[in-house]
Image (tube, rainbow, N blue to C red; front, side, top):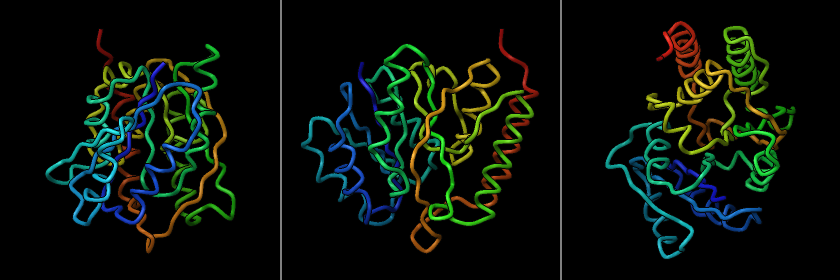
Length: 231
Protein backbone atom coordinates (compact mmCIF):
# COMPACT_ATOMS: atom_id res chain seq x y z
CA UNK A 1 0.00 0.00 0.00
CA UNK A 2 1.17 3.50 -0.85
CA UNK A 3 -0.31 6.41 1.12
CA UNK A 4 -0.27 9.86 -0.47
CA UNK A 5 -0.24 12.67 2.08
CA UNK A 6 -1.71 15.78 0.49
CA UNK A 7 -0.43 19.06 1.94
CA UNK A 8 -2.19 22.29 0.87
CA UNK A 9 -0.06 25.35 1.68
CA UNK A 10 -1.11 29.00 1.64
CA UNK A 11 0.99 31.71 3.28
CA UNK A 12 2.63 29.32 5.75
CA UNK A 13 6.31 30.26 5.38
CA UNK A 14 6.80 29.93 9.14
CA UNK A 15 5.37 26.41 9.37
CA UNK A 16 5.86 24.84 5.92
CA UNK A 17 9.34 23.42 6.55
CA UNK A 18 8.40 22.06 9.97
CA UNK A 19 5.30 20.43 8.51
CA UNK A 20 7.24 18.43 5.93
CA UNK A 21 9.99 17.53 8.41
CA UNK A 22 7.34 16.29 10.84
CA UNK A 23 5.72 14.11 8.18
CA UNK A 24 9.04 12.71 6.99
CA UNK A 25 9.99 11.74 10.55
CA UNK A 26 6.87 9.63 11.18
CA UNK A 27 7.27 5.83 11.06
CA UNK A 28 4.41 4.62 8.87
CA UNK A 29 3.36 0.97 8.47
CA UNK A 30 3.38 1.42 4.69
CA UNK A 31 5.13 3.37 1.96
CA UNK A 32 4.26 7.07 1.77
CA UNK A 33 4.67 10.05 -0.51
CA UNK A 34 4.04 13.72 0.25
CA UNK A 35 2.39 15.90 -2.39
CA UNK A 36 2.58 19.55 -1.33
CA UNK A 37 0.71 22.21 -3.28
CA UNK A 38 1.53 25.87 -2.77
CA UNK A 39 -1.81 27.54 -3.41
CA UNK A 40 -0.57 30.87 -4.75
CA UNK A 41 1.10 31.98 -1.51
CA UNK A 42 2.10 35.62 -1.31
CA UNK A 43 4.88 35.03 1.20
CA UNK A 44 7.99 32.81 1.02
CA UNK A 45 6.12 29.50 1.34
CA UNK A 46 7.13 28.32 -2.12
CA UNK A 47 10.80 29.08 -1.52
CA UNK A 48 10.64 27.16 1.75
CA UNK A 49 8.99 24.16 0.09
CA UNK A 50 11.63 24.11 -2.64
CA UNK A 51 14.28 23.22 -0.07
CA UNK A 52 12.69 19.74 -0.11
CA UNK A 53 12.64 19.28 -3.89
CA UNK A 54 15.54 16.79 -3.81
CA UNK A 55 13.78 14.49 -1.36
CA UNK A 56 12.43 11.47 -3.30
CA UNK A 57 9.39 11.21 -1.00
CA UNK A 58 8.29 14.80 -1.63
CA UNK A 59 6.57 16.19 -4.73
CA UNK A 60 5.97 19.92 -5.11
CA UNK A 61 3.31 21.71 -7.16
CA UNK A 62 2.49 25.41 -7.35
CA UNK A 63 -0.72 27.23 -8.27
CA UNK A 64 -0.15 30.53 -10.02
CA UNK A 65 -2.91 32.10 -7.90
CA UNK A 66 -4.85 31.27 -4.77
CA UNK A 67 -7.72 28.90 -5.58
CA UNK A 68 -8.66 27.62 -2.13
CA UNK A 69 -7.97 24.56 0.00
CA UNK A 70 -10.34 22.32 -1.94
CA UNK A 71 -8.69 23.19 -5.24
CA UNK A 72 -5.21 22.56 -3.82
CA UNK A 73 -6.27 19.15 -2.53
CA UNK A 74 -7.84 18.31 -5.89
CA UNK A 75 -4.60 19.18 -7.67
CA UNK A 76 -2.58 17.09 -5.21
CA UNK A 77 -4.90 14.08 -5.49
CA UNK A 78 -4.73 14.09 -9.28
CA UNK A 79 -0.93 14.16 -9.16
CA UNK A 80 -0.63 11.53 -6.41
CA UNK A 81 0.28 7.90 -7.01
CA UNK A 82 -1.04 6.40 -3.77
CA UNK A 83 -3.73 3.80 -3.22
CA UNK A 84 -5.12 5.98 -0.42
CA UNK A 85 -4.92 9.71 0.28
CA UNK A 86 -5.12 11.80 3.43
CA UNK A 87 -4.85 15.55 3.93
CA UNK A 88 -2.39 17.17 6.33
CA UNK A 89 -2.79 20.93 6.76
CA UNK A 90 0.41 22.95 7.05
CA UNK A 91 -0.92 24.94 10.00
CA UNK A 92 0.54 23.14 13.01
CA UNK A 93 -2.85 22.19 14.47
CA UNK A 94 -2.58 18.44 13.89
CA UNK A 95 0.00 15.89 15.05
CA UNK A 96 1.52 13.87 12.20
CA UNK A 97 2.17 11.00 14.62
CA UNK A 98 -1.59 10.35 14.67
CA UNK A 99 -1.64 9.46 10.96
CA UNK A 100 -0.54 5.80 11.36
CA UNK A 101 -3.56 5.29 13.62
CA UNK A 102 -5.84 6.11 10.70
CA UNK A 103 -4.14 3.42 8.64
CA UNK A 104 -4.72 0.61 11.15
CA UNK A 105 -8.43 -0.02 10.30
CA UNK A 106 -7.57 -0.02 6.58
CA UNK A 107 -4.64 -2.41 6.89
CA UNK A 108 -6.75 -4.65 9.14
CA UNK A 109 -9.50 -4.77 6.52
CA UNK A 110 -12.07 -3.09 8.78
CA UNK A 111 -12.64 0.08 6.74
CA UNK A 112 -11.88 1.94 3.54
CA UNK A 113 -12.67 5.43 4.84
CA UNK A 114 -11.28 6.64 8.16
CA UNK A 115 -11.78 10.01 9.91
CA UNK A 116 -9.64 11.38 12.72
CA UNK A 117 -12.01 12.72 15.38
CA UNK A 118 -11.03 15.70 17.56
CA UNK A 119 -12.19 15.96 21.17
CA UNK A 120 -11.90 19.78 21.53
CA UNK A 121 -10.58 19.94 25.07
CA UNK A 122 -10.38 23.31 26.83
CA UNK A 123 -6.64 23.46 26.15
CA UNK A 124 -7.06 22.84 22.41
CA UNK A 125 -10.19 24.69 21.28
CA UNK A 126 -9.86 27.97 19.39
CA UNK A 127 -13.08 29.45 20.81
CA UNK A 128 -16.52 28.50 22.06
CA UNK A 129 -18.18 29.60 18.82
CA UNK A 130 -15.67 27.71 16.67
CA UNK A 131 -16.37 24.47 18.52
CA UNK A 132 -20.15 25.04 18.52
CA UNK A 133 -20.04 25.82 14.82
CA UNK A 134 -18.24 22.58 14.11
CA UNK A 135 -20.66 20.61 16.27
CA UNK A 136 -23.62 22.32 14.60
CA UNK A 137 -22.42 21.43 11.10
CA UNK A 138 -21.74 17.85 12.19
CA UNK A 139 -25.20 17.62 13.77
CA UNK A 140 -26.79 18.90 10.56
CA UNK A 141 -25.01 16.19 8.55
CA UNK A 142 -26.14 13.51 10.98
CA UNK A 143 -29.76 14.64 10.79
CA UNK A 144 -29.79 15.03 7.01
CA UNK A 145 -28.15 11.68 6.31
CA UNK A 146 -29.30 9.67 9.34
CA UNK A 147 -25.72 9.05 10.42
CA UNK A 148 -23.66 9.49 13.56
CA UNK A 149 -20.25 10.96 12.86
CA UNK A 150 -18.51 13.07 15.49
CA UNK A 151 -16.32 15.52 13.54
CA UNK A 152 -17.25 16.50 9.99
CA UNK A 153 -14.70 19.30 9.65
CA UNK A 154 -11.65 17.26 10.62
CA UNK A 155 -8.72 17.60 8.26
CA UNK A 156 -7.91 13.90 8.71
CA UNK A 157 -10.02 12.08 6.13
CA UNK A 158 -8.32 8.98 4.75
CA UNK A 159 -9.92 7.25 1.77
CA UNK A 160 -8.99 5.46 -1.46
CA UNK A 161 -7.56 7.89 -3.99
CA UNK A 162 -9.86 6.67 -6.78
CA UNK A 163 -12.89 7.05 -4.53
CA UNK A 164 -11.91 10.64 -3.83
CA UNK A 165 -11.50 11.38 -7.53
CA UNK A 166 -14.84 9.71 -8.34
CA UNK A 167 -16.62 11.92 -5.79
CA UNK A 168 -15.73 14.88 -8.01
CA UNK A 169 -15.39 17.40 -5.20
CA UNK A 170 -15.87 20.84 -6.75
CA UNK A 171 -15.76 23.16 -3.73
CA UNK A 172 -12.67 25.31 -3.98
CA UNK A 173 -12.41 26.39 -0.35
CA UNK A 174 -13.08 24.90 3.08
CA UNK A 175 -16.50 23.75 1.86
CA UNK A 176 -14.81 20.67 0.42
CA UNK A 177 -14.97 19.07 3.88
CA UNK A 178 -18.79 19.22 3.92
CA UNK A 179 -19.16 18.27 0.26
CA UNK A 180 -16.91 15.23 0.62
CA UNK A 181 -18.63 14.01 3.78
CA UNK A 182 -22.11 14.59 2.37
CA UNK A 183 -21.32 12.58 -0.76
CA UNK A 184 -19.86 9.72 1.28
CA UNK A 185 -22.87 9.61 3.61
CA UNK A 186 -25.29 9.76 0.71
CA UNK A 187 -23.55 6.71 -0.78
CA UNK A 188 -24.09 4.87 2.49
CA UNK A 189 -20.42 5.03 3.48
CA UNK A 190 -20.00 5.60 7.21
CA UNK A 191 -16.44 6.63 8.08
CA UNK A 192 -14.56 4.62 10.69
CA UNK A 193 -13.47 7.14 13.34
CA UNK A 194 -10.33 7.14 15.48
CA UNK A 195 -9.45 9.75 18.14
CA UNK A 196 -6.69 12.24 17.35
CA UNK A 197 -4.99 15.11 19.14
CA UNK A 198 -5.57 18.70 18.09
CA UNK A 199 -4.46 22.17 19.13
CA UNK A 200 -6.19 25.06 17.38
CA UNK A 201 -4.23 28.18 16.59
CA UNK A 202 -5.62 31.68 17.02
CA UNK A 203 -6.62 34.20 14.38
CA UNK A 204 -3.42 36.11 15.16
CA UNK A 205 -1.40 32.96 14.51
CA UNK A 206 -2.94 32.57 11.08
CA UNK A 207 -6.24 30.69 11.44
CA UNK A 208 -8.16 31.23 8.21
CA UNK A 209 -11.58 29.58 8.54
CA UNK A 210 -14.47 31.97 9.32
CA UNK A 211 -18.20 31.85 10.07
CA UNK A 212 -18.96 32.26 6.35
CA UNK A 213 -17.31 28.89 5.74
CA UNK A 214 -19.77 27.39 8.21
CA UNK A 215 -22.71 28.85 6.34
CA UNK A 216 -21.35 27.46 3.08
CA UNK A 217 -20.90 24.04 4.70
CA UNK A 218 -24.57 23.96 5.74
CA UNK A 219 -25.64 24.97 2.23
CA UNK A 220 -23.50 22.24 0.68
CA UNK A 221 -24.93 19.60 3.02
CA UNK A 222 -28.47 20.60 2.05
CA UNK A 223 -27.62 20.70 -1.64
CA UNK A 224 -26.14 17.22 -1.62
CA UNK A 225 -29.05 15.84 0.38
CA UNK A 226 -31.65 16.92 -2.17
CA UNK A 227 -29.51 16.35 -5.28
CA UNK A 228 -30.68 13.42 -7.34
CA UNK A 229 -28.23 10.55 -7.34
CA UNK A 230 -26.75 9.52 -10.66
CA UNK A 231 -27.82 6.13 -11.94
